[in-house]
Image (cartoon, rainbow, N blue to C red; front, top):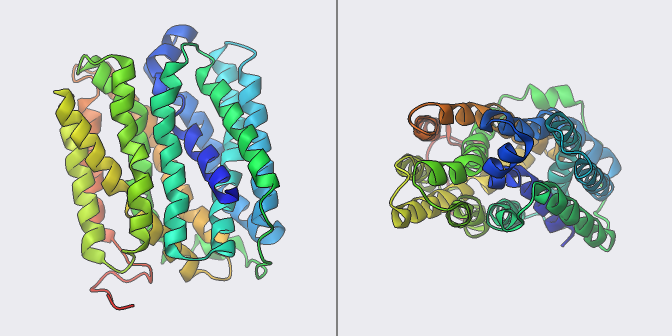
Length: 368
Protein backbone atom coordinates (compact mmCIF):
# COMPACT_ATOMS: atom_id res chain seq x y z
CA UNK A 1 0.00 0.00 0.00
CA UNK A 2 2.84 2.37 0.80
CA UNK A 3 4.65 1.76 -2.48
CA UNK A 4 1.37 1.83 -4.36
CA UNK A 5 0.53 5.27 -2.96
CA UNK A 6 3.79 6.64 -4.34
CA UNK A 7 3.36 4.92 -7.71
CA UNK A 8 -0.24 6.06 -8.08
CA UNK A 9 0.53 9.73 -7.38
CA UNK A 10 3.40 9.81 -9.86
CA UNK A 11 1.41 8.01 -12.56
CA UNK A 12 -1.72 10.10 -12.11
CA UNK A 13 0.15 13.37 -12.70
CA UNK A 14 1.58 12.11 -15.96
CA UNK A 15 -1.76 12.23 -17.81
CA UNK A 16 -4.19 14.28 -15.72
CA UNK A 17 -3.76 17.42 -17.88
CA UNK A 18 -3.66 15.56 -21.20
CA UNK A 19 -6.99 13.95 -20.33
CA UNK A 20 -8.71 17.36 -20.70
CA UNK A 21 -6.28 19.07 -23.07
CA UNK A 22 -8.95 20.73 -25.22
CA UNK A 23 -10.87 21.94 -22.16
CA UNK A 24 -7.72 23.38 -20.59
CA UNK A 25 -6.83 25.12 -23.86
CA UNK A 26 -10.28 26.71 -24.07
CA UNK A 27 -10.38 27.74 -20.41
CA UNK A 28 -6.94 29.34 -20.44
CA UNK A 29 -7.27 30.76 -23.95
CA UNK A 30 -4.18 28.96 -25.24
CA UNK A 31 -3.29 26.46 -27.96
CA UNK A 32 -2.68 22.75 -27.54
CA UNK A 33 1.08 23.21 -27.93
CA UNK A 34 1.02 25.44 -24.83
CA UNK A 35 -1.11 22.88 -23.01
CA UNK A 36 1.71 20.45 -23.74
CA UNK A 37 3.93 22.70 -21.63
CA UNK A 38 1.80 21.81 -18.60
CA UNK A 39 3.19 18.29 -18.89
CA UNK A 40 6.61 19.57 -19.97
CA UNK A 41 6.78 21.76 -16.86
CA UNK A 42 6.20 18.72 -14.69
CA UNK A 43 8.81 16.65 -16.46
CA UNK A 44 11.55 19.29 -16.44
CA UNK A 45 12.02 18.82 -12.71
CA UNK A 46 10.82 15.22 -12.72
CA UNK A 47 13.59 14.31 -15.18
CA UNK A 48 16.32 16.47 -13.68
CA UNK A 49 15.83 15.16 -10.14
CA UNK A 50 15.61 11.42 -10.78
CA UNK A 51 19.21 10.63 -9.81
CA UNK A 52 19.38 13.16 -6.92
CA UNK A 53 16.14 11.76 -5.50
CA UNK A 54 17.55 8.26 -5.90
CA UNK A 55 20.59 9.27 -3.91
CA UNK A 56 18.42 10.79 -1.20
CA UNK A 57 16.39 7.59 -1.04
CA UNK A 58 19.55 5.50 -0.72
CA UNK A 59 20.80 7.73 2.09
CA UNK A 60 17.71 8.88 4.00
CA UNK A 61 15.28 6.07 3.30
CA UNK A 62 12.65 5.69 0.60
CA UNK A 63 9.70 6.20 2.94
CA UNK A 64 10.91 9.60 4.16
CA UNK A 65 11.72 10.89 0.68
CA UNK A 66 8.43 9.55 -0.68
CA UNK A 67 6.40 11.28 2.00
CA UNK A 68 8.11 14.58 1.21
CA UNK A 69 7.31 14.08 -2.47
CA UNK A 70 3.63 13.48 -1.79
CA UNK A 71 3.43 16.64 0.30
CA UNK A 72 5.02 18.70 -2.49
CA UNK A 73 2.62 17.35 -5.13
CA UNK A 74 -0.39 18.05 -2.91
CA UNK A 75 0.72 21.60 -2.13
CA UNK A 76 1.62 22.55 -5.71
CA UNK A 77 -1.59 21.08 -7.15
CA UNK A 78 -3.73 22.85 -4.56
CA UNK A 79 -1.97 26.15 -5.28
CA UNK A 80 -2.75 25.82 -9.02
CA UNK A 81 -6.47 25.94 -8.16
CA UNK A 82 -6.26 29.52 -6.97
CA UNK A 83 -5.32 31.39 -10.14
CA UNK A 84 -6.38 30.65 -13.73
CA UNK A 85 -3.24 31.85 -15.47
CA UNK A 86 -1.35 29.52 -17.80
CA UNK A 87 2.12 30.63 -16.69
CA UNK A 88 1.21 30.13 -13.03
CA UNK A 89 -0.23 26.66 -13.67
CA UNK A 90 2.90 25.68 -15.61
CA UNK A 91 5.01 26.95 -12.71
CA UNK A 92 3.05 24.85 -10.21
CA UNK A 93 3.46 21.82 -12.45
CA UNK A 94 7.19 22.57 -12.40
CA UNK A 95 7.08 22.40 -8.59
CA UNK A 96 4.91 19.28 -8.63
CA UNK A 97 7.61 17.59 -10.74
CA UNK A 98 9.94 17.79 -7.74
CA UNK A 99 7.39 15.77 -5.81
CA UNK A 100 6.70 13.20 -8.53
CA UNK A 101 10.45 12.60 -8.93
CA UNK A 102 10.71 11.86 -5.22
CA UNK A 103 7.57 9.68 -5.30
CA UNK A 104 8.49 7.49 -8.24
CA UNK A 105 12.12 6.74 -7.45
CA UNK A 106 11.58 6.27 -3.73
CA UNK A 107 8.55 4.08 -4.39
CA UNK A 108 10.56 1.73 -6.60
CA UNK A 109 13.30 1.56 -3.95
CA UNK A 110 10.75 1.00 -1.17
CA UNK A 111 9.32 -1.92 -3.13
CA UNK A 112 12.79 -3.39 -3.70
CA UNK A 113 13.84 -3.00 -0.08
CA UNK A 114 10.66 -4.46 1.42
CA UNK A 115 9.71 -7.17 -1.10
CA UNK A 116 12.58 -7.40 -3.56
CA UNK A 117 11.31 -9.50 -6.48
CA UNK A 118 11.08 -8.52 -10.14
CA UNK A 119 7.37 -9.38 -10.03
CA UNK A 120 6.93 -6.90 -7.16
CA UNK A 121 8.60 -4.24 -9.30
CA UNK A 122 6.14 -5.12 -12.04
CA UNK A 123 3.22 -4.71 -9.66
CA UNK A 124 4.64 -1.36 -8.56
CA UNK A 125 4.83 -0.26 -12.18
CA UNK A 126 1.34 -1.60 -12.81
CA UNK A 127 -0.10 0.70 -10.16
CA UNK A 128 1.64 3.67 -11.78
CA UNK A 129 0.27 2.81 -15.20
CA UNK A 130 -3.21 2.18 -13.83
CA UNK A 131 -3.15 5.63 -12.25
CA UNK A 132 -2.36 7.25 -15.58
CA UNK A 133 -5.15 5.30 -17.25
CA UNK A 134 -7.65 6.20 -14.56
CA UNK A 135 -6.71 9.87 -14.95
CA UNK A 136 -7.56 9.68 -18.66
CA UNK A 137 -10.91 8.06 -17.90
CA UNK A 138 -12.01 9.98 -14.80
CA UNK A 139 -10.64 13.52 -15.04
CA UNK A 140 -12.83 14.38 -18.09
CA UNK A 141 -15.90 13.59 -15.95
CA UNK A 142 -15.16 16.66 -13.79
CA UNK A 143 -16.37 19.48 -16.01
CA UNK A 144 -14.03 22.23 -14.82
CA UNK A 145 -10.62 23.68 -15.60
CA UNK A 146 -9.74 22.79 -12.00
CA UNK A 147 -10.21 19.06 -12.67
CA UNK A 148 -6.56 18.04 -13.27
CA UNK A 149 -5.22 20.04 -10.33
CA UNK A 150 -7.94 19.31 -7.78
CA UNK A 151 -7.83 15.59 -8.51
CA UNK A 152 -4.02 15.55 -8.24
CA UNK A 153 -4.16 17.26 -4.84
CA UNK A 154 -6.71 14.74 -3.56
CA UNK A 155 -4.69 11.76 -4.81
CA UNK A 156 -1.46 13.02 -3.22
CA UNK A 157 -3.13 13.78 0.11
CA UNK A 158 -4.69 10.32 0.21
CA UNK A 159 -1.31 8.78 -0.64
CA UNK A 160 0.35 10.65 2.21
CA UNK A 161 -2.19 9.20 4.62
CA UNK A 162 -1.54 5.66 3.37
CA UNK A 163 2.23 6.05 3.54
CA UNK A 164 1.99 7.24 7.14
CA UNK A 165 0.86 3.72 8.11
CA UNK A 166 3.44 1.91 5.95
CA UNK A 167 6.37 0.20 7.74
CA UNK A 168 9.94 1.39 7.47
CA UNK A 169 12.18 -0.37 4.95
CA UNK A 170 15.37 -2.17 6.08
CA UNK A 171 18.55 -0.08 6.05
CA UNK A 172 20.43 -0.09 2.73
CA UNK A 173 24.20 0.10 2.06
CA UNK A 174 25.64 3.61 1.67
CA UNK A 175 25.31 4.91 -1.87
CA UNK A 176 28.35 5.45 -4.06
CA UNK A 177 28.97 8.63 -6.02
CA UNK A 178 26.13 9.43 -8.41
CA UNK A 179 28.62 10.28 -11.16
CA UNK A 180 29.57 6.61 -11.37
CA UNK A 181 25.93 5.64 -11.76
CA UNK A 182 25.29 8.19 -14.50
CA UNK A 183 28.38 7.14 -16.44
CA UNK A 184 27.62 3.40 -16.22
CA UNK A 185 27.07 2.48 -19.85
CA UNK A 186 25.47 -0.84 -18.89
CA UNK A 187 22.37 1.10 -17.85
CA UNK A 188 21.85 2.75 -21.24
CA UNK A 189 20.04 -0.14 -23.03
CA UNK A 190 17.77 -0.57 -20.01
CA UNK A 191 17.08 3.17 -20.06
CA UNK A 192 16.24 3.01 -23.78
CA UNK A 193 13.82 0.14 -23.14
CA UNK A 194 12.05 2.08 -20.41
CA UNK A 195 11.95 5.26 -22.51
CA UNK A 196 10.40 3.48 -25.49
CA UNK A 197 7.83 1.57 -23.44
CA UNK A 198 6.83 3.88 -20.60
CA UNK A 199 8.03 7.19 -22.06
CA UNK A 200 6.46 6.87 -25.49
CA UNK A 201 3.24 5.38 -24.11
CA UNK A 202 2.86 8.45 -21.90
CA UNK A 203 3.44 10.72 -24.91
CA UNK A 204 0.72 8.84 -26.77
CA UNK A 205 -1.53 8.84 -23.71
CA UNK A 206 -1.35 12.62 -23.47
CA UNK A 207 -2.56 13.10 -27.05
CA UNK A 208 -4.80 10.13 -27.82
CA UNK A 209 -7.92 11.94 -26.59
CA UNK A 210 -7.41 14.97 -28.91
CA UNK A 211 -6.54 12.60 -31.77
CA UNK A 212 -9.69 10.52 -31.44
CA UNK A 213 -11.79 13.62 -30.84
CA UNK A 214 -10.45 15.76 -33.69
CA UNK A 215 -9.49 13.22 -36.34
CA UNK A 216 -11.90 10.47 -35.36
CA UNK A 217 -14.89 12.61 -34.38
CA UNK A 218 -15.44 10.82 -31.07
CA UNK A 219 -16.82 12.64 -27.98
CA UNK A 220 -14.13 13.57 -25.45
CA UNK A 221 -15.60 11.25 -22.81
CA UNK A 222 -15.61 8.27 -25.19
CA UNK A 223 -12.11 9.07 -26.43
CA UNK A 224 -10.93 9.29 -22.82
CA UNK A 225 -12.19 5.81 -21.99
CA UNK A 226 -10.62 4.35 -25.15
CA UNK A 227 -7.36 6.18 -24.57
CA UNK A 228 -7.20 5.08 -20.93
CA UNK A 229 -6.42 1.56 -22.15
CA UNK A 230 -2.98 2.75 -23.33
CA UNK A 231 -1.93 3.31 -19.73
CA UNK A 232 -4.41 1.32 -17.67
CA UNK A 233 -3.69 -2.12 -19.16
CA UNK A 234 -0.15 -1.93 -17.83
CA UNK A 235 -1.74 -3.16 -14.60
CA UNK A 236 -1.90 -6.57 -16.31
CA UNK A 237 1.33 -6.68 -18.29
CA UNK A 238 3.81 -5.02 -15.93
CA UNK A 239 3.59 -7.83 -13.35
CA UNK A 240 3.79 -10.29 -16.26
CA UNK A 241 7.00 -8.57 -17.35
CA UNK A 242 8.47 -9.51 -13.98
CA UNK A 243 8.19 -13.16 -15.01
CA UNK A 244 9.71 -12.54 -18.45
CA UNK A 245 12.94 -10.82 -17.40
CA UNK A 246 15.06 -13.48 -19.19
CA UNK A 247 12.81 -13.95 -22.25
CA UNK A 248 14.48 -11.61 -24.73
CA UNK A 249 12.38 -12.71 -27.71
CA UNK A 250 9.15 -11.89 -25.89
CA UNK A 251 10.49 -8.53 -24.70
CA UNK A 252 11.45 -7.64 -28.29
CA UNK A 253 8.03 -8.78 -29.48
CA UNK A 254 6.41 -6.38 -27.02
CA UNK A 255 8.08 -3.44 -28.76
CA UNK A 256 6.94 -4.70 -32.17
CA UNK A 257 3.38 -4.98 -30.87
CA UNK A 258 3.50 -1.48 -29.35
CA UNK A 259 4.74 -0.01 -32.61
CA UNK A 260 1.99 -1.74 -34.57
CA UNK A 261 -0.70 -0.55 -32.16
CA UNK A 262 0.49 3.06 -32.25
CA UNK A 263 0.59 3.01 -36.05
CA UNK A 264 -3.00 1.76 -36.14
CA UNK A 265 -4.06 4.50 -33.70
CA UNK A 266 -2.86 7.04 -36.26
CA UNK A 267 -5.83 6.04 -38.43
CA UNK A 268 -8.12 7.50 -35.70
CA UNK A 269 -11.23 5.50 -36.66
CA UNK A 270 -13.35 3.37 -36.52
CA UNK A 271 -13.78 3.31 -32.74
CA UNK A 272 -13.72 -0.51 -32.26
CA UNK A 273 -10.38 -0.69 -34.08
CA UNK A 274 -9.03 2.18 -31.97
CA UNK A 275 -10.07 0.42 -28.77
CA UNK A 276 -8.30 -2.75 -29.90
CA UNK A 277 -5.15 -0.82 -30.88
CA UNK A 278 -5.10 1.09 -27.58
CA UNK A 279 -5.47 -2.19 -25.69
CA UNK A 280 -2.59 -3.72 -27.65
CA UNK A 281 -0.32 -0.76 -26.87
CA UNK A 282 -1.29 -0.81 -23.21
CA UNK A 283 -0.56 -4.51 -22.81
CA UNK A 284 2.68 -4.51 -24.79
CA UNK A 285 4.15 -1.34 -23.27
CA UNK A 286 3.94 -2.73 -19.75
CA UNK A 287 6.15 -5.77 -20.31
CA UNK A 288 9.62 -4.07 -20.41
CA UNK A 289 9.12 -2.19 -17.10
CA UNK A 290 10.23 -4.90 -14.67
CA UNK A 291 13.20 -6.05 -16.80
CA UNK A 292 14.45 -2.45 -17.01
CA UNK A 293 14.05 -1.60 -13.32
CA UNK A 294 15.10 -4.95 -11.88
CA UNK A 295 18.04 -4.98 -14.28
CA UNK A 296 19.19 -1.53 -13.14
CA UNK A 297 18.94 -2.54 -9.48
CA UNK A 298 20.85 -5.74 -10.13
CA UNK A 299 23.61 -4.03 -12.10
CA UNK A 300 24.13 -1.44 -9.35
CA UNK A 301 23.39 -3.09 -5.98
CA UNK A 302 25.55 -0.41 -4.33
CA UNK A 303 23.15 2.34 -5.48
CA UNK A 304 19.85 0.73 -6.56
CA UNK A 305 17.64 3.81 -6.20
CA UNK A 306 20.11 6.06 -8.04
CA UNK A 307 20.34 3.48 -10.85
CA UNK A 308 16.55 3.37 -11.17
CA UNK A 309 16.56 7.16 -11.10
CA UNK A 310 18.91 7.25 -14.08
CA UNK A 311 16.81 4.77 -16.07
CA UNK A 312 13.64 6.70 -15.33
CA UNK A 313 15.35 10.01 -16.09
CA UNK A 314 15.83 8.96 -19.71
CA UNK A 315 12.14 8.10 -19.96
CA UNK A 316 11.21 11.42 -18.36
CA UNK A 317 13.34 13.32 -20.87
CA UNK A 318 11.59 11.39 -23.64
CA UNK A 319 8.24 12.57 -22.29
CA UNK A 320 9.60 16.08 -21.78
CA UNK A 321 10.65 16.38 -25.42
CA UNK A 322 8.10 14.15 -27.08
CA UNK A 323 4.89 15.53 -25.59
CA UNK A 324 5.12 19.07 -27.02
CA UNK A 325 6.55 17.79 -30.32
CA UNK A 326 3.60 15.48 -30.89
CA UNK A 327 1.33 18.32 -29.80
CA UNK A 328 2.80 20.49 -32.53
CA UNK A 329 1.79 17.93 -35.16
CA UNK A 330 -1.87 18.70 -34.37
CA UNK A 331 -1.35 22.02 -36.14
CA UNK A 332 -0.63 20.10 -39.37
CA UNK A 333 -3.36 18.87 -41.74
CA UNK A 334 -2.80 15.34 -40.40
CA UNK A 335 -4.31 16.31 -36.98
CA UNK A 336 -1.55 14.52 -35.08
CA UNK A 337 -1.34 11.39 -37.20
CA UNK A 338 2.23 12.15 -38.30
CA UNK A 339 3.32 12.44 -34.69
CA UNK A 340 1.83 9.05 -33.84
CA UNK A 341 3.56 7.42 -36.80
CA UNK A 342 6.92 8.89 -35.74
CA UNK A 343 6.45 7.48 -32.24
CA UNK A 344 5.65 4.06 -33.74
CA UNK A 345 8.94 4.10 -35.66
CA UNK A 346 10.94 4.95 -32.53
CA UNK A 347 9.25 2.16 -30.61
CA UNK A 348 10.05 -0.37 -33.33
CA UNK A 349 13.71 0.69 -33.44
CA UNK A 350 14.11 -0.15 -29.74
CA UNK A 351 14.07 -3.87 -30.53
CA UNK A 352 17.75 -3.44 -31.49
CA UNK A 353 18.87 -2.59 -27.94
CA UNK A 354 16.79 -4.98 -25.80
CA UNK A 355 18.66 -6.50 -22.83
CA UNK A 356 17.61 -9.01 -20.17
CA UNK A 357 17.72 -8.40 -16.41
CA UNK A 358 21.46 -9.24 -16.35
CA UNK A 359 22.25 -6.80 -19.16
CA UNK A 360 22.69 -9.49 -21.82
CA UNK A 361 21.65 -8.93 -25.43
CA UNK A 362 22.03 -12.46 -26.72
CA UNK A 363 20.18 -15.65 -25.96
CA UNK A 364 19.21 -15.61 -22.30
CA UNK A 365 19.09 -18.40 -19.75
CA UNK A 366 15.46 -19.42 -19.45
CA UNK A 367 15.95 -21.70 -16.48
CA UNK A 368 14.96 -20.83 -12.94
